[in-house]
Image 1 (cartoon, rainbow, N blue to C red):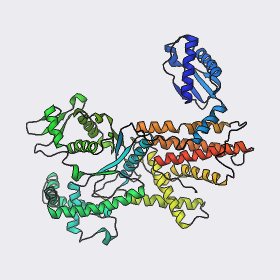
Image 2: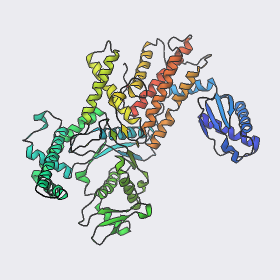
Image 3: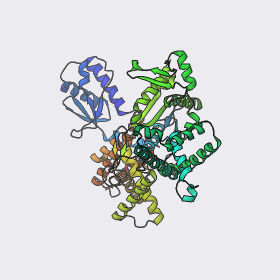
Image 4: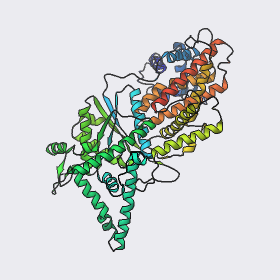
Amino acid sequence: MPIQETLTSAIQKAFESSYNVVIESVEFQATRKDFIGDITVVVFPFLRVVKGNPFEIATKLGDYIKEHVTEVADFNVVKGFLNIELSTTYFLNQFSTIYQTENFGITRLKADEKAVMVEYSSPNTNKPLHLGHIRNNLLGYAVAEILKASGKKVYKTQIINDRGIHICKSMLAWQKWGKGETPESTGLKGDKLVGNYYVKFDQEYKKEIESLIADGVAEETAKKQAPILLEAQEMLRKWESGDEEIVDLWKTMNGWVYKGFDITYKDLGVDFDTLYYESDTYLLGKEFVTEGLKSGVFFKKDDGSVWCDLTDEGLDEKIVLRADGTAVYMTQDIGTAIQRIKDHPDVGGLVYTVGNEQDYHFKVLFLILKKLGFDWAKNLYHLSYGMVDLPSGKMKSREGTVVDADDLLINMTNTAREISEELGKLEGYTDEEKEALYKTIGLGALKYFILKVDPKKRILFDPAASIDFQGNTGPFIQYTYARIQSILRKADFDLSMVANEGELSLHEKERNLLKQLSLFPEVVKQASDNYSPALIANYSYDLVKEYNSFYQSVPILGAENKQEKVFRTQLSKKVAEVIKSAFGLLGIAVPERM
């Protein structure tokens, strides 16, 4: 039984016997660093049912708890806060349970719970993945893994935006200037090759606009009448009508992009269970507009367009079907959500990992799905996140100024190589082992730097600062894990033996480390409930800080007696397991040596 439950029961009995009143709940918090104690009871809420001096009430409670709860060694009262000191026996018993628990903090799959589908990535097929996509992928993947760790079945998915005018711009530019180039003939990844033609289109489009303006055409008219744009629009019409030549080109160029994406996803360490394509889903949803019209969820305007009135919800009217009967993005998203539940009947909720510029869109989408009567619509969540900036400024895909995801991954590995070589701690490594380590450190630094920040906050990403071996960074935590592995390799005794036989006192640093270690299951639950990998990341840092303080303060393998040596080594081992587990939820690997 968790100590909070034991203490709650004792406190309720104390109030019954001393004041003849019933206390429904007890508020606990971690004891402040400047107070003595391990867990604190907040006394002030009790004053609603018991009149009196908070200090006297807390003292009476403390006396009762100390007498009746064997795990309590002592207590003190500070301004209405009852600080409880737990016994050494309690900590040793708690650690014994933790040590023997396989996958501590991770909940097994709960058969009675509905599955969750997490959507992330969802790129356009006219350009490579960039820095913004990296935050999206890392967030979506980590949230999916955290939800799994809380006992949920999870499907990872994406919808690939493989149609539209932006796709036709790349296709048209390749037709005009590509001279039959392929990824094989150029040695370029397919997504990069196609992205180059998207940039080429924009360059030529701007030239045509300037030429038209020079001939006296108004700027806004020039933007709409530029011949190359009109050609792209005609290509889109041909694609939608099924023109064989255009569809074949579309399939070929998208195929190049998918192969390129797959390489990036593999290097980034993310994966998907299901894929959806906009070319398959863009007509979905129209049938539900018809049903919504019948049920009064939607209404038709005089021009024939169909809308949803959300003014009662504090929003505005939202179009779901144009006057000519064609769908808008909202229609497609309605249909895709419904199709996903049809495809996976065990799914009871969806998480959309999309930037915060789409906050309003998802408020509208979720409200419409609720109005359409879908029970699962109450379990929809928009994992909204801020943009990622570099010191050099904003990124624009069409101008070719984006930070390419592949280039960033290579740069992170190179930065890790430079810093590691300066530190000079890689004696005995083969060149192959060094390269694998640089990649692990570089990728870990990138992922941790991004995931330690609350998703809603904007990030200014500094690659060099992320690969610091000190402070709140991925490499600092990875290094601590590797340090523990070094200790375990040197241990010359059986780590499965019982450490707490006989007399074993606990150093303050050991108690602090045990308290931090025991928090992991609750942190996983909170991270799952809040869709926040940042909680896992910062817990990992706090755990490592406590471990390093312990490491600096007490001898481990050099402990005076065997009981201490075994206990401290076992404690180190479990800390390493939790670091690995926590980082695994973030998609970060930990090296055995550094």
